[in-house]
Every structure is written in structure tokens, then in C-alpha cells.
Amino acid sequence: MRKIAADFIYTLDGRIEPLAKPLLTLDDDGKILDISQYQSKDRLQDQSVDYFRGTLVPGFVNAHCHIELSHLKGAFRQATGMSGFINQINELRESVDEKGRLDAMKAEFENFSRQGVVAVSDISNCSESFAFKKDYLRLKHSAGNPLFPVYYRTFVELFGTEKADAEAILEGGQRTADQATAMGLEASVTPHSCYTMSPKLLEITAKRGLESGIISYHSQESQEEEDMIMKGSGALSDNYHSRGLSTPPVTGATALEYFIDRIAEKEGKVKGRINLVHNVVISQRSIDRAKEALQSPFFTICPLSNIFIHRQLPPIDLMRKNNLKICLGTDSLSSNLILDMVREMECLQENFPGLELGEFLVWACSNGAELLGKQDSLGSIEKGKTPGIVLLENLNGFKITKDTKSTRII
Image (tube, rainbow, N blue to C red; front, side):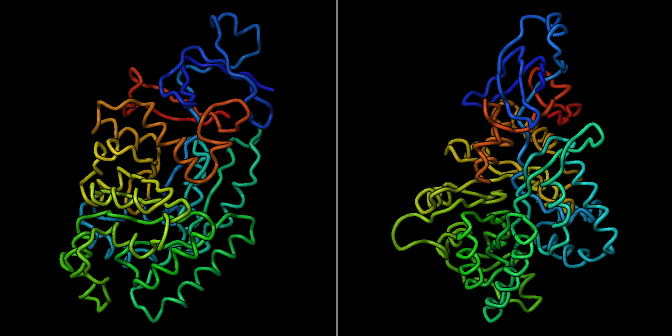
């Protein structure tokens, strides 16, 4: 059993305001046994309590990452738009040898563990990350091992623009997902986006993925995507045509509506959790369709990645106005300079100064836990849960600054 105390705590147990003078009692596995408040720091010394100067929060849930792209750190030009980004992915993805790719991944797995990430919704296009995920799932923190376990939910992402290839691509992706499952990992196939998939591949992949109860999908990441789907024009459409690739049919619908139309049920809402990632150009029209057709949509934002590629952020005010279930992710080091949930919150704080830290933490902790179906154990600090405990240091009046850092302590 262990007791810890700090200056403040965000429990996220239905409230988003900080509480002063928290005292937590936990068992040896990190399960919360009791939450109370201490009277004075002097008395803590008599109770064998570990005191931390700062603010305690639940472990973070990174709702979107491509950790297998970690070897691409610093390799990409910024502000190229989606068309330019795709060109760089095609050019640079295999630019580092296997050892370099594995070393880069290992460093980021360790960073997540130390920073306080307890769970990750991670995209895979191959099996290279699976051994790391298995190790971190079974990891035991100890005095001799400073790292903490992290749960990874793997989504084997599929893409292919030609209808004739759809069945073969799906079965190839399923074999990769089965490989992860055989290693004790939770994994399933998932569609990438409207513009990288034939309508048939999008439909059959989404259906297969939803059999597991959840899919992850890149949605409305750029205006180029919208222009391709709604008008059949723009930089992304021109890119695909120049490479002799098929493009989706022009329907006049938004990209999110196009996706929903491919998977919609004849009666009732589409069941399962659907992680709509990025949402840079989401509109009220798209939101209304999602609410109408999807049983459990989540809307993940990756602020630093969006700025890196597009110099644009999602319409946060519109998303909040509609009470969307917002989650927070980092994306990959091909479109980000650092994978750090605190830096994502710092970006949001700078651009939306009127929002409170408690709301950002709900996005970074509670909503992500619900997305992954782990809300019974993660996402909030409550009795009986094992959410991981993270220390935030160097806040400025409960505002994230460039000096704020996170460290996992439980």
C-alpha cells in the first residue's frame, strides 16, 4: 500500500475543477483505495506519505498515434498540405533501415511510459511495433525498472484505390491483425480515409473492423479532402490523377457524409465506437449527419499535427457547441516534432485561452478511456480504478505553459 499527496488534483469524476490538498491511498497494483484531503503538510510526515509539489491527474489516453513512423522525426517539410504530405510519405517511409526504425520506436515507447500515457489508440501498417506493444502490456514497474506499463489498441490501417484489389487488401490486413492477436494484443482492421480507398474497400473494411466494436478513421483532415469528395477537384484530386489512381465518386456530400453513406444501416444507427480523427474542416452539416447516423462517434483532434501540415486547427468552438465527445492525440513524428500530450494541451491553451485545463484533461483522459472501452479502469481518479497517476509540474494558475511537464508516478 502507498499514500501520495500533492498540492492539487483533477479527479475528473464528474467534476473538472481542481481540488486542493489531495491524499490518495493505493494498493501495490495502483488501484485507488481511498481519496481524501490532508490538513497540513507537517502531518504528512507522520503518515508515511509521499508528497509531490504540483498537480495530480489521471494517466493520459493518446487517442491517435502512428508510433511505427517514429523514424521520420524531423524528415518532413511543414505546411505542404495533404497532397505534399502524401508525396513525402511515399518518398521517405522506407528511408531508414529496420534497426533505425526499431530504435526510434523504442525511444517513443519509453517516452510515453515516462510522460504518463497509460493507453494509446495506435495505427499500424505492418507488424514492426507488435513486440514492443506486447512488452509494455506485460511490463511491471519496480525500483529497478522506472518504466510503467502502457496498453496499446492496434488498428491495422488499410488503403487502396482500386476496386479489384479490395478483397485481397482486406484479407492481407486481417492476417496482420491476427498476428497481433496471436501475441496477446487487441487488434483489428480499420479504414484509413475516404480519399485513399475505393468505395468497396472502405465499406468492407469498416464492416469487418466494426465487428470488433471499434474503428479509427481519418476524417475531414483538410480542405483538399473536402474538395476531392464534393467537387472532384483540388490539389489532392490532381495528385491522384497524376499518379493514375482512381478517386472516389463525386457526390456533393462532405467527406464525413460520404463515409457515413458507405457504412449507414438501412434502419437504426451504425453500432460501435467510431473514432473520427482530425476534423480540421468539420462542419455543422457533417456533425448533424454523424449525430443522426452513428451510435457512438468520437472526435479526436491532433493540434500540433494539424498545424504542421495545414497551419490550421479544428473548429473547437463549433465542436464544443455541439457537445461532441472530443479526444486528444499526437499523430506521428512524420507530422509532429514531438509526441507529448502536454504539448498538445499547450497548443490548445495558446489558441483557446478561455478554456480551462479541466476540459482539456477530459479530452486527454476520460474521453479517450471511453473511446477504447477502458472507462471502468482508466480516465478518472476514483475508488476501485487503476488509472495511473501523473504529476503536472510548472502550471501557471492552472494553465499549461511551455515549462509545464508531466511525469508518471503511479
